[in-house]
Image (cartoon, rainbow, N blue to C red):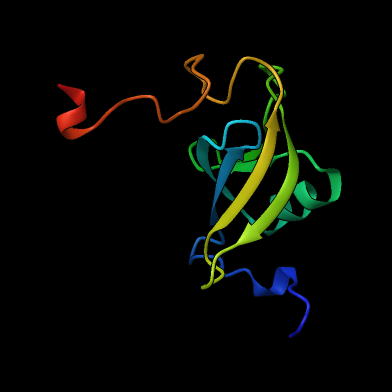
Amino acid sequence: MTQPSLDDVVFDDRGLVPAIAQDRATGQVLMLAWMNAETLAETLETGRMVYWSRSRQERWAKGDTSGDIQKVVEARYDCDGDALLFVVDQVGKGACHTGEFSCFFRPLGAEAE
């Protein structure tokens, strides 16, 4: 088996790949954001989550403005190479810009009633 490399990651036609952040302590999915090759490389180099903001079209280091950073514990990619999973230590109040710990706090469907 060959050693995986950044060349194994499949980016979409915009040069992006979805990145899921999961809290190490709780196992809870914190957020889904996007990375390009540069922010992925920076994340792996520094051990801190760095994303690509699709709305602002710029690099976004998680916590630069909020102080709520994510430290990488483990990085994986899926069987197709087109999705990333990062197990992180969430430092600060939480991952969501709303102040919630996770961006996935709203129930959908029957659970919502």
